[in-house]
Amino acid sequence: MSRKVLVAYASKMGGTAGIAEAIGAELREQGHDVDVLDVTQVHTIEPYQAVVLGSAIYIRRWRREAVRFLRANADGLRTRQVWLFHSGPVGPDKDQDQQMPPVVRRLARDIGATPAVTFAGRLEPATAKGFLARRLAKGNLAGDSRNWAEIRAWATDLGIAISASRH
Ligand SMILES: Cc1cc2nc3c(=O)[nH]c(=O)nc-3n(C[C@H](O)[C@H](O)[C@H](O)COP(=O)(O)O)c2cc1C
Image 1 (cartoon, rainbow, N blue to C red):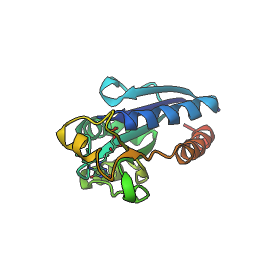
Image 2: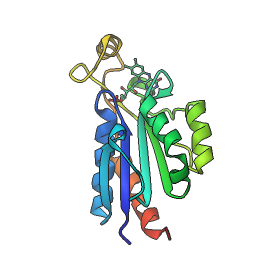
Image 3: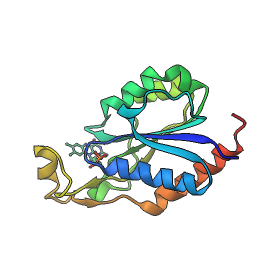
Image 4: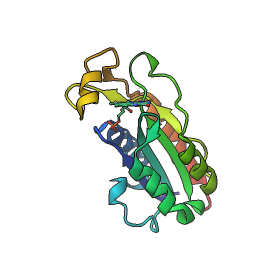
């Protein structure tokens, strides 16, 4: 059954936004009514039956606007299906699952969401923002490691779970 789904993202250099768009496209293909939004543009989660939230990881932390969203909407998220993902690893460690930051782990537990899945990220000279990012983008971490097949497969499973839910 078709549901209204929010895919919200927190992204600095656009890589995580691209992942959110790919998830949204897959969910739409399955017939869901999907909004893909920068998390700062979400005014209410009231219309949505399911919420997907993704954040970029910087120095082992989530972007603060994603953490703020989880905290501010905890009550509403508790009564909805919620899936979390984060994106970060690049270079030789691109396939390593990243731990959820402790504050995110606590909030996820509080709303009853399963742990965040890790997707590899992107760090490239053309899109790098900030001194450190531009510098790192010249080294062995450089590249677009986002695995579209993996992302799509995850979204396919989500779409099926969302359809099957009784919410
Ligand atoms: C300064 C800096 C710190 C980073 N720290 C982490 C980290 O702790 N863990 C991780 O997996 N990736 C880390 N990354 C990689 C980014 O998460 C990756 O480039 C990601 O795709 C960026 O997402 P965005 O384009 O949506 O902002 C870091 C990147 C930079 C530039």
